[in-house]
Length: 181
Image (cartoon, rainbow, N blue to C red; front, top):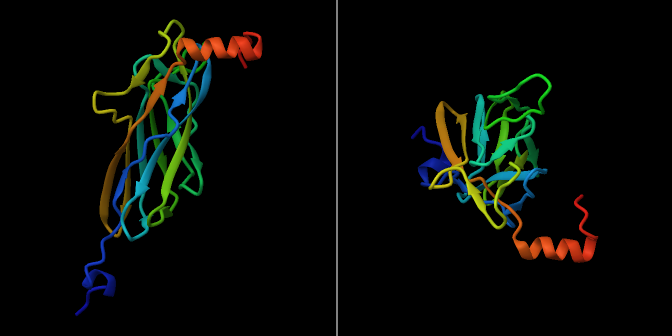
């Protein structure tokens, strides 16, 4: 028998599933902030990359990425080079899609662990208070691809942004003198 002992025993491998940001990102219209996309490894094996990683992230309608950085959090793989879809001279960077690549090899997410990446976004001015902005009806805001031992692994992640409600704004005015930070 030439099979790996874990494979012969039927040990399940990594299973990467969407792990939405909690609490959900709240961004005031016209201001930039940080949001995350996350995966959870629900399997008993570590998810590893030995190929080229690719991630494509779509901004929910009414939002824009404010730069092209994809920052790994809590040990998630890094080395990302990203390109957006919009740039005009003299206008701040505003993109609706980021396409990112990395040639780094190693662990994506340990068994039972998560992999998370941070992005900077803004909500366009004039967006109604208390609105949740999602990418699609199924809320798939990002697709992630990596390779391991000749296999391609694809998974999706959600990306939602909420605008503060009227109660949040009243609280800020009462406790912060109406100033935004």
